[in-house]
Length: 320
Image (cartoon, rainbow, N blue to C red; front, side):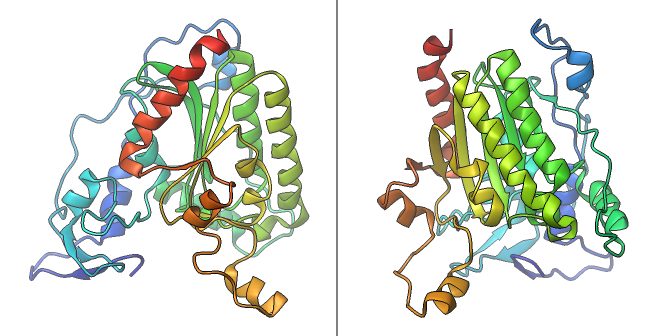
């Protein structure tokens, strides 16, 4: 049943699953400012109009008990939600949706979503692909596998993009590549830093070679942004693999990671079968990459907002 095994309560009514509860909650709009007065970009063409947050939300099912697969402890959905889906007993970082992560990071009322106007393309005529994408849009509330916008963290403005593993495992196709590229371009015009949270299984196989081409496209966008003097912060979450890890995810000025995140190109089993050797313990995990210099710092999800605020504050004077 996904990441968690539930202990169901006796009830005559049909109980919501953990996935259904967070999916319903995540459809809430992220609060946005009513005024955005940056003069360097045509806001009407690039950014959506502010969306008001819903006033109320039904809370049934939050007391459902589930078992953490890492330590076996039981906690309520309410407690896990309040702890950003990090197990309070063992510290295991569980899946979190793109919308919820964005909401946990940005200042209330500061988010303006960058428009995603890329149509659904099916270059390989993959069966039912368009239908699957449209169903995921309805289910997740996302336009594609990444949510991007201009927002503030403790008053420090930045372009923030969050990949959603709930949308085809955050795989990078044409639309995702365009949104990542657009994030860099908007940040360059507005003279803002870029923060990208990656969570992806890699390139999207349904779009074939066109999805692989997004590696070059996003890498070039990151290079142009860097050449213009922009600050790029990459936050690697579980998993960050395939074409995403081999492109923009690992090209940042500062690279952060969540504890225990799987980070690499091919999976450990594939590598072991290819080279015929046993890999070191913890290979491709965030802690291993930090030890070997590929990750600058491992940051707990509950501390990420403060850490990003600190980094943005340190670099603010230089950008001015």
